[in-house]
Amino acid sequence: MSPSDTVHTESVGLVLQPYTARTGADEWSIAPELLLPEVQRVLSEENVPLAGAEHVALSPEEEGGYGEWERLGLADAHLGRAVASLAERGAFVVGLLGNCNSSLGMLAGLQTSGTSRRSLRVGLIWIDAHADFNTPETTPSGWLGGMPVSVASGRSLTRLRRTAGLDVPLSTRDIVMMGQRDVDPLEQVLLDDSQATQVSAADFLSQSAGMTDAVEELSRRVDVIYVHLDLDILDASEIPGSFFETPGGPTAAQVAAPVRALMRNPKVRALGIASFPTAERGRAKSMSSALTLVRAALDGLKERGS
Image (cartoon, rainbow, N blue to C red; front, side):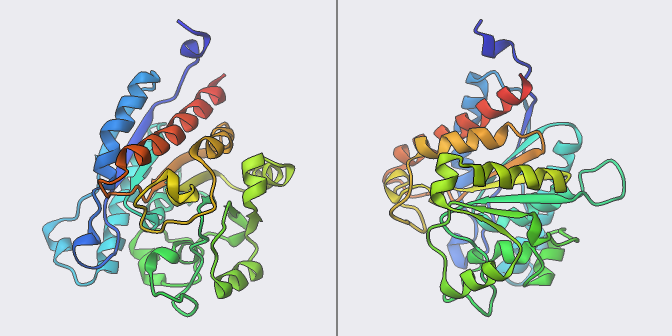
């Protein structure tokens, strides 16, 4: 048995949220189900206890509700309850998410996972090629997936946020953006006018003092932290068939080091992995990239225990 095998590793609970708020056949993503058996295999290989795997599904009545955005909110509310349940039992939560819109449910779950009636103060670390800080007034595309951080911080779509169960919006002081390289002009104006901390891609990958200081300051202010990892942070060649292929990004090996470092922080209680490509072309490469980051996260959790 190696020394790392003797370190106590907390259990990991998996939550799967396939609803995306896209229109038509794309409203439900197969990405979480594609990831599930491979992530379970990695957990087994790494001797990490599995606390359970919760699958989000709407009731027949909820499925009949009007509008993809409304159904997303209802699905995120289910997700939040699953996250809270696992977190209250002491598990570290990993979300396998159809896309970034599910971050609302992950945040809601952590916010309500305390032992008292008081909502926990949740910090957000957003690792993504995009800031997803647009509002309906600034978005050039109308794409909801470009808005979840603004929604979570109470800057837009209040009904969606409340339907998802995120009753208290995040303060932008409690948001750290990392690694963005494709931000819309008006979206950048919103970010610059907010109190969110922006960590450049270079500082993120090098784990500069700017990055570590931002995380330490966030840790002092909040009760728990959610790390959201959109796989399009990677170069398009690392995740073939991505819905938003963004060239000029890092490799999975380069991102693994800062992800591992973030997972050492005991305030980090959940990780969301979003936007795994569902196309068959290049799936093996995409899966390899995703699992590189999963293993890095698990290594960080083990090092936390030591």
